Image 1 (cartoon, rainbow, N blue to C red):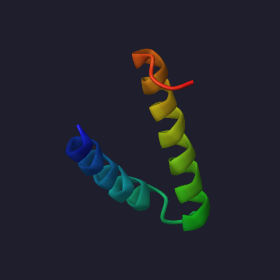
Image 2: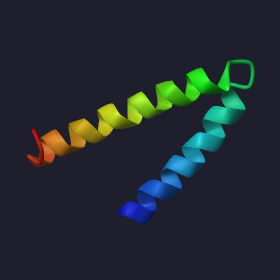
Image 3: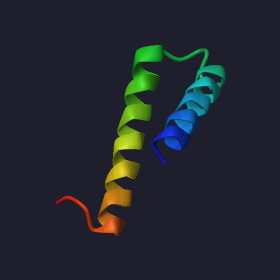
Amino acid sequence: MGIYRTICNKVEDVMVHLLTKKQKLDQVKTKVELYRKSKEAERAKKRGVGA
């Protein structure tokens, strides 16, 4: 699943870049990282891994 998730993240990065050309890149990257971390935490919680 690591390769699949990596590819999905790269494609998502390209789409976000295309859709947010007028916004500041640093702010957009921060929002995307927070979103990915929250989704990963939800996945871990569903699997029962971690705290």
